[in-house]
View 1 (cartoon, one colour):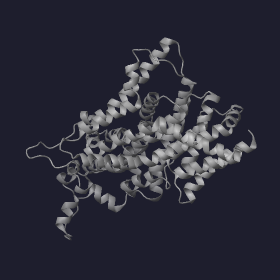
View 2: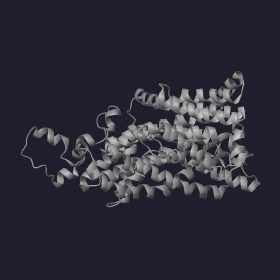
View 3: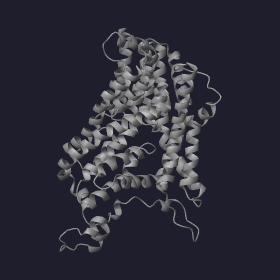
View 4: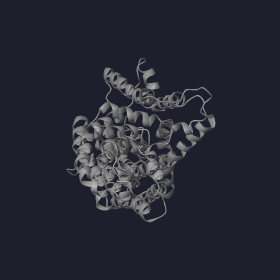
Length: 497
């Protein structure tokens, strides 16, 4: 590989890491500056660099920006309506007694598809505390299973913004990525639950006193009523164990849903209705993928663009991610929210969702800009030729890039978008299947969540783990699922390669 082009790539990635870690700039600005550095070092003219940046940014958001915004909006309504909580409780009942870690891992995986990890964990953690209080043991196991379940789908399954952005950057089929991400999640969940059940009991004694008391002690309201009474033995009765502490319960959604008219029944969301805004769009997108594959096979077209047959057009329309997620938003607003919820409140929630999606959109667009500079400057082609000359499987390149960037700066979303941006110019040249490349980017970004990851602090603080206990518990379990994804990627590459 030409030394100048290699230097351009190395300095571009290093610029992202250094700016995010050592300056006040965020990933959006860091990616744009990295694109400038890459183009200049590669010998591209300044005006050509600017053109590549704006072209890459616009093309990327044109294909994926609307979908990210709609996906985040659905997640917000699921959160505020109580639908996410209803789904979680349904899964707990489904799995039954004795399988709580499996239930919590599955709950986490389901909730994290439309809801960001951080807020999703805060919403669902009271369930883990309530179960542990009834069992009088096992809180760390449940908390770890819940957290890593969320990690799996947050990294692997669209319409979570990170994998959604990767799908757009690499030109992969969204339905195929959803199906493959779900398969990866199902196959990796046993690793997560096994690790949680193995490590959890070892760390129970390391839980901070404050969290231990909140989980296993008397309800906070009872303690407040007793005041400074010191005669209590602190022994829990069965009633104490069965009743969740008041401060551990999620906020009552009705407090945010408006004032019901006199005589109206209390608003409750069942599990079936709660699943519709999430399940219907996913099914429509997958149906589009399946019917399209059948049609292509019938026409003898393998990959690429083709002219859909007349019978496929309706499925292609309603299964287009934009249309499918618009349907999801309509279902969320008109099925999950009561009729008395004020319009202004719903619009306020949409504004909050847009605010949370804003930075993701900018980072995604900046990743597209970096990818376009890599293509137009020749760095992408040079890297492809260099990889082709080695024995390294090409699909491991995005996996390793995502791994290294995640270790360096902590954000899984930034790591996978950076890896996709670097990989995009290689997909066609090296013959990497876009689906394999997308899964490699997302799986590689799961490694070793630790101090520079905001989600690390959410999970460990709520779980009451500090220092080496936090590393053994949370950093260990995220690395376990990262390692478990490697053989899955090899298998996927054998099937599609």
